Image (cartoon, rainbow, N blue to C red):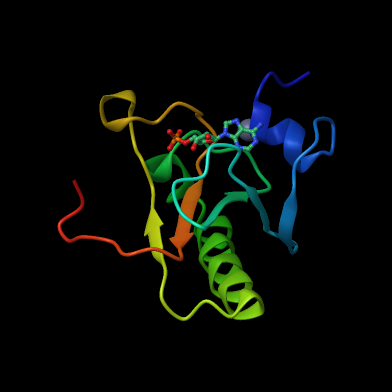
Length: 111
Ligand code: AMP
Ligand code: ZN
């Protein structure tokens, strides 16, 4: 049985606030939000990080389409999408996920 917390969320084995779901992607609210809107979007299949996901073009494209479609559903025209890759930049959950952030001002480059 998987020990991956995001696999368990996708499977409904631990609770989440679901925001969006399709065949490839599952999105839920981050429990430690960094913006008014802070959604995590994950592929339903387990990949540890972005380089791992990129080996499966169908899953990668499915994740991007999920981000597009949930943004459209939520009426988000401007949003920031972040993939942390590696513990050195703060990745703490090793099931690849996109942070989708909106509803506050964002500086560039990010701090
Ligand atoms: P990262 O640091 O890029 O790996 O992001 C992991 C994110 O997952 C953090 O923003 C956490 O707040 C979030 N997180 C961890 N566990 C859960 C959970 N069970 N439900 C929702 N968000 C979570
Ligand atoms: Zn997983």
